[in-house]
Image 1 (tube, rainbow, N blue to C red):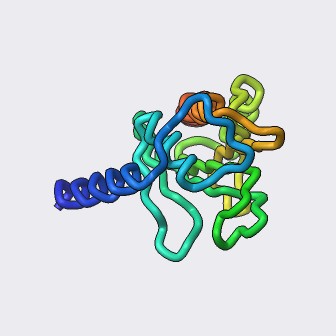
Image 2 (cartoon, rainbow, N blue to C red; image 1 turned 135 degrees about the vertical axis):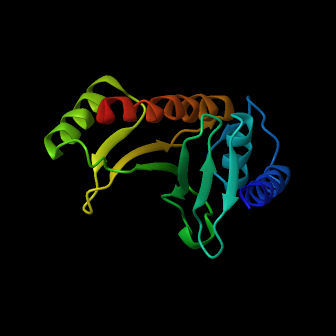
Length: 164
């Protein structure tokens, strides 16, 4: 069953990567598009899965980290058109074997030491790390890739601060 689910996930991921525009490191993005986001994520070795009826994209990074990506600050949010922001959110399970103070302390230490994401406890007590990047003035696809890649590495480190 797990193999079938993984096969379906890979097929979906491969089809979304195939439909994305190609990655051009020198291309300047004045606004973010879904195809540019998918091409950049594919360049990082990540798989993407569209969420039916939503603008959000599920991302499975090559390091195993799962995230939710969404283009924001759009002229038309319902179609992700003219978007000036990219948000990527990773949620972690709040550990049962550490105190709330240890969780807060770990989040604070992460925020102090890591620069490519902001960690917090959401209103429901879930640990989250969010990355937000703007395109104001334009950004090359290579810079887009570098920023998302740095977030991927940084967000994966949160567990060390909270769980250890």
